Amino acid sequence: MKPKKRLLVPLTIILITLLALILRFYRFYPNLIFNGEMGTDYINVWNMLYNNRTWLIGPRTSHEWFFIPPFAYYIYAGVMFLGKMSPISINVFWGIVGSIAVPICYFYIKKLFDTKTALISALFIAVSPAWITQTRDARYNLLVSILFLPYLYYLKRSVEDKGKSLLKLGLVLGLMMSFFPSPLLLIPGVLISFAFFKVKPRLKYVGNFILGFIIPNITFLIYEIGNRFEITTKLITWIPYRILGFFGFYPKNTIDSEIFTQNTISIYRFISSLFSLKIGMIAGSIFVLLTLGLIVYSIRNYNNRKKEVSYYLLLINLQTCVVGLFVHGNPPSHYYYTIYAVPLVFLAYFMVRLFKSKFLLWLSVISIGGICISSLITDKWFFQDRLPVDYQNRPVAYETQIKLADSIIQMSQGRPFNLKRIGTNDHFENNFANNYIYLLLLKGVKVDLNSTDTYTIVEEPNNVFVYKEY
Image (cartoon, one colour):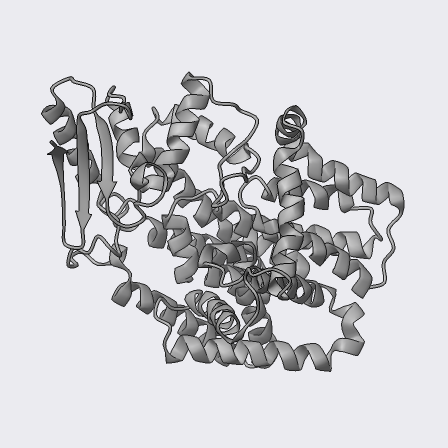
């Protein structure tokens, strides 16, 4: 290979990564996201560092009884300690991690498929509105989407070496569980993948997989032992409960025309959001073409599946996760984080095989990239300098939150007080006001939930203010 051609690919990856950084950090501070859920996590980390909160378990999920392992909190503790406990440090950290997803994608997709597919997939991740929004949201779930790539690589290795790589696969899958529970759906994907390719790993390798899965979750296991496996027991009973409910044995998420429509729309929105913030004709066309491509290509190449191992493993895991979420019933967008990369990789894969002309290939790639970026410019709030205030759809600016916290401190004049909030998601813990509670904590003021003096923050659609209740 000529020196110029040898340098072209690394240079392209550097440029794509820079583009990812720009899209993830443009107007970073004016639109920095800090909400009540993030405040809950930061308070937990603060208590881990300075009070008596356990280090054995991590964040609580939407189910009150379900806590995930604590690796995300370990990351938060290190980043926040270095950043003097500032919330901004977490947003910066995830912005960098979200940008590094580009070279990580290239590295693994090249090993799984080829250089062109890897380059195009990396570019799509760099400009995808869903990936950018996920990074801007600054949540630990982001790592699930990124870790799926090494998961798929080690799954392929495990299939090809008849289970010898199952220890590494277990390690990656176990680590994913520290950032979101939906990777549980990949476990059936592993079993189906081995059955599909008629691989029977030795019992020793299966043991290695279990060991690998346990290692990143050892503190969680210690917690569970001390609490008689309370979380695990509830999880084991909850899964069949959802499945039986889907088929009508319990009055919960039972399949009917309404549930079926909601689930189908949910999948459609997930794939469309990867390319556009508006569920319009262009995003819909990509969704339809991608779906048809998967059906046609999978059927035509079924007899050649041993040469298309990566493709069918990707397809099996996509199907397993989608079916699992379908059974769950009307899943929100973040439930799809595990398979965020899959449609983008499939699209890149099909484009490389469809367009034999380099000109047509890169013209198509640039066109889709342009659709993604134009969607961000025309729609997404953090890419516009001035937009009408709308606190129902956009979070209160971080600077405004600080001003509100300062106003409360000034109004309280050093007396103990309680804090409430009226606004979107105020049915969650502490009225979804834990972001304000954390900012007050940073300023040396601790909210007293038992105090009779109460300040209420009101986030109306077009206004935000605080008042004292009398």
